[in-house]
Length: 301
Image (cartoon, rainbow, N blue to C red; front, side):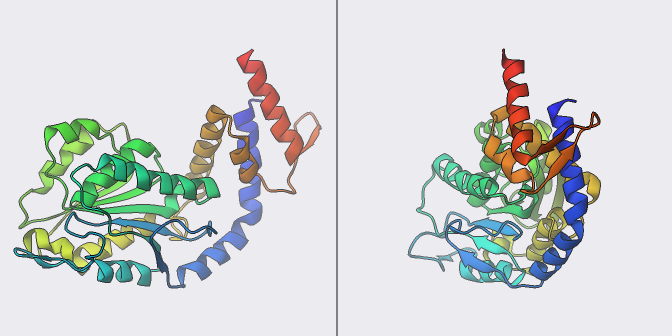
């Protein structure tokens, strides 16, 4: 039997066995209030929902409540608190101002990878970027190339052609723009045209009358759809079907096999799992991983 199919069979059976306990744990988690952090915690809770918030350019270290002459005060901390109250583990920092956004996108992408490596399902990770932060979020989508991560891009459709050529969107992406801002929703569609990894895509236009300042405050017009998008895509949100879960597991298996990441395979299998093959042969978790290693070695030789 192909090792991918064999491992998927194991995962399917493990999913059925643990589904009731997971559902109860998820319900409990969903009722809890979140926290606000500046980096990925050392001890990662794999069943929590994580939300990275990347602010606009005006917010900077030492000035988390800056004022724009045109748009007023950027209520950065209020925005974080609003996401916290929705039950997310919010990860955000007031970064150093810079027109060079690639290094920061790479930095936050590495934080996301740390969560994934710790075992957090990608559906439980959402990246929210506002204004320049939206460009950073799109670069992260391009760098990570993970179809199961979630993104919300707010007020960031006005990039030039050079940036457009850099971006290749992956995952589930929601674009939010303001009708009275400079750039219409149609300008966002440029980023969709050549995207190779989109799983879900949606556009939303608000009409607050506040121009670009609509993203300076936690207005319900963009906060509510942002939270709904993150919850609908996540496991904690409760909307994942068995088919979606199996697709996620298959993606994880394929990636682990491609990278020969046996640590990832070890995380995907329950410690006490026993597999009985159609031939009657019995394998425990350790033996199964050894069998997969041998199969990969045979393919390489």
